[in-house]
Image (tube, rainbow, N blue to C red):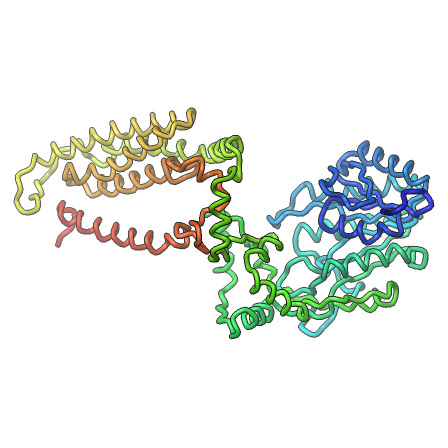
Length: 537
């Protein structure tokens, strides 16, 4: 364990409870007194690291944390490694980018100027730069800046703020590679830690303001990576299909917004998918004596070897979803034991999730209430109570009631059904009764069937009832929270049957069946219209 005496220089690390923060702390702990600053203490802190809680969105919180660090350090801070920042995968501008990343850094710098601080190291991103002009052309620290979305924009703005407000503190901007784009240098965690440690070690020799690009010099494209991985896993080339950007964006949008799937690829990422970065790290080599010791292309064969050797453990170790490769006997046994154990989510968590879903989808019963009113007023707009000019002979000559009576019956049905749909839909808004959803859906089915049972002569009424009935059923039971799903199923994080590598009931699996159902609907509507005399044969 490192000596906590004040003889050791003190290094502060913001975001110290995170993956990189703890790795950097381990790299520094032997030669420095490491004090972490984060919103909460880590569950398993590196041996020897102290932690002070900090709120970067509060002047008082930042001042209090820095003062506590000053007291513990004996009044002098060798370096501050600033990792804490806001990030999300929406690609949209979030107020937290300014509150945490930009203004949080401003508060931290202001507090540090009152303390004897030698160095301030800011973790930035390569994405503040414009992409390389072409493959084979490298960019350096002086290349143009052109951040394309919210995250790198917040980093670029913070870099400018640091330059303006650093005072007498030496600053180092480390623009790391590794944020996912189409073609960008990669960076191993150990190489990143090595770069930070060297930056802190050489704080006295570095210029007052330093900017460094940190990453591997080789930049394989995703296409190259996919082909290489395919050969390593299967021993042969993968067939790669190239889709237009707009189609790919539509597919990603459907996955995230319509199917509510948590995917790694977001629609906004596709817009920048052609960006390519190659970097010149000669400045880091000169000032830090740093160069990456790892290469993704060289390491890839060993990574794939371990994947093939034990797929499920490899997936778990890399925080992926082990059931994707869960076809082995041991994995089935583990799954069976897991099913007998506690649920992945508690009953309280499930109920809370259902309430959240319900509060976000109250528009569905509200829409059904409006559709019910529309249905109730339809008979007057399509003339179901008006006399029929000429009787349309029924199919096969069966005796049925006069057309005006059949239409009037359908009109009464529409009024009653519409009012009932409105009543039950409003009940569903104010009370989470599952039976109300099923009753509403049953009324939707009746609305679809009524024109056939009454053998209406009105083509308009038939079209309206079919469309409204479909929408009523969909909004009643197909919008989450869907009735009929057990709490046990909702508590499980995985919907794959034991021994399956995929779920047989995903939306992707259902698409062909849904498509065939629509074909059947369109054909049956045409035949029914012919039978009821709405169209000529």
